[in-house]
Image (cartoon, rainbow, N blue to C red; front, side):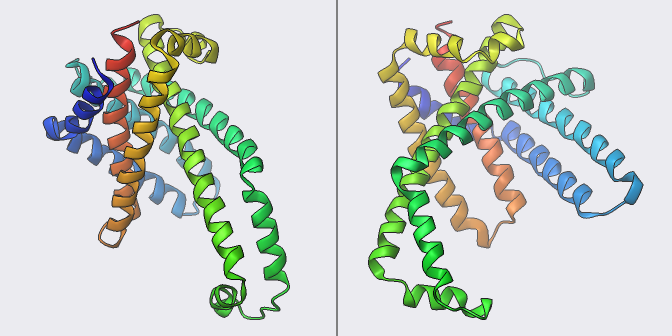
Length: 265
């Protein structure tokens, strides 16, 4: 199947399976609300207990979201009330995603050095210290009028480049997470699923250029979706935006990588 066709079908999936998508979205909203509420209250000696219970509920709901997404992609059965299975799936998803997120953050931080962003931040910080700003209320207005336009423009360019590179790296390693889940389906082995060497070998077999094309297209799509959602933040709460992003990522990512890699391996 061609990459463009796979991505096109993945973008249509939330609309083709609109009932399942809405269900995943609602579960994501519930998950967000539970987390917000549980962390907003100080319950003293019961705080740790509440956090543990919240973690279990979150992981079970995450596992349920994965089951529903798998139903949308592969027409598999959904175990709505199999809490043990949903918990196991949620824990696996959490560990794999966290593992690759940490790697992506480290790689992004290392790549900030050659882009010059850290240097520009340091220069900006030094200039701000020299402005003798006594009132924080007027700080942003004063900075925007007193900093040289060339420095502001240069910083904006470096920052934009850094954001794009970081997003590209993030999507690359999140793609590793999706491939890991495919390996997990095939082998039921977490160690193999988190072995980067195996993932790179799979990518090599499918072709590095085709893989990079896939990642670049997904990065552009992610930028477009994020910009649209940020424009909607005036009419949607942060919880709603976060739930939409999570639901879209599950549907588009699962369909794309399952159809791109699973049929080959």
